[in-house]
Image 1: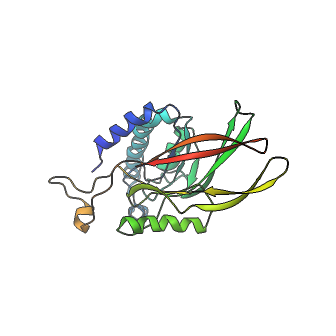
Image 2 (image 1 turned 60 degrees about the vertical axis):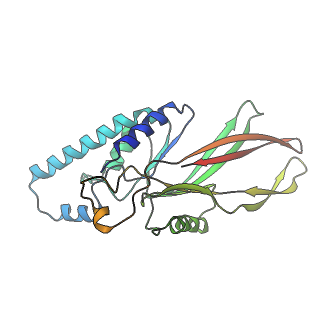
Length: 254
């Protein structure tokens, strides 16, 4: 049930984005789920069978690495999901994939700061924070899925709150927040507005296809929202009290 057409369109699009940076949100392979890993760990399989499965998933990780190799040097990191193969030596397909792409494995939850320096703008600096979690069940409606992400803001203060797992896809601005800031030598206080963004990061796993059996069909679930989300981040220079202040204009696309 892999959505090959959507995946190919993503790869073509992503390779054209020369200034893009990427973040992996987990579940890079459909197998092996948490319940399936329990079965495999207690199955008493022969060593030859276990080694065959290891070779299969090494091949899966290698194939995905080849498709994503253009991201090398552009990956913030890769979160871990609940679908992965455990090689039994402390490594999983998530670990192997992250290492092969030269990026960090971030675990199921990560608090990330992106720091920017603008050398052509008086060496001004600015940062954006991301609070990302692979995800948990978030309701069957769009509102329910985004309510789960909104609750992340009670745990961490960030500019982006991202969650995967449910195969939902979408991004929207949350309620703006007011902060106090001081700039310049006088350190005069001013009120600033900060608008966090919420994102369900999508997937490439179909739920329905003609004449195909799937667990989504058996459970009567809604079709999956295929694809990805992206944010366009534009730095804007403002001069306040004799000091350069960098702010960001953010647009989200699903």
